[in-house]
Length: 92
Image (cartoon, rainbow, N blue to C red; front, side, top):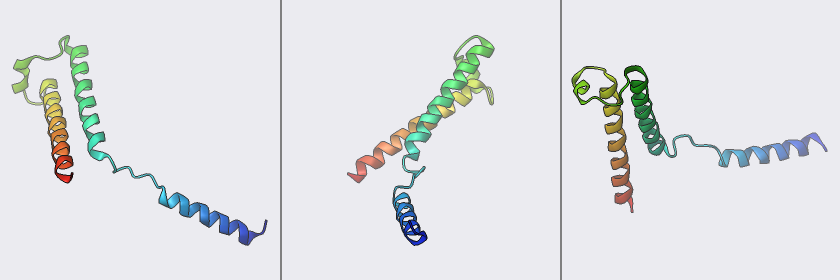
């Protein structure tokens, strides 16, 4: 096989790779929603391990408590999910 032929095949292969490139931002809303819910669950699990209870409603008013962080993550995840459903519905 000559160098010219090898170069030709290599360029053809690279063009195929370029068209099938991985796009990490393709489903970013779905991934972000998953990670927000996962982090909220992890925060509540950490609360259970450290404090012995999962959720104490009176701790919501304490700044930067586990409950406040988990609630913020859950609300952000829900709002992102609702937004993606609305945008998806409008695009149809």
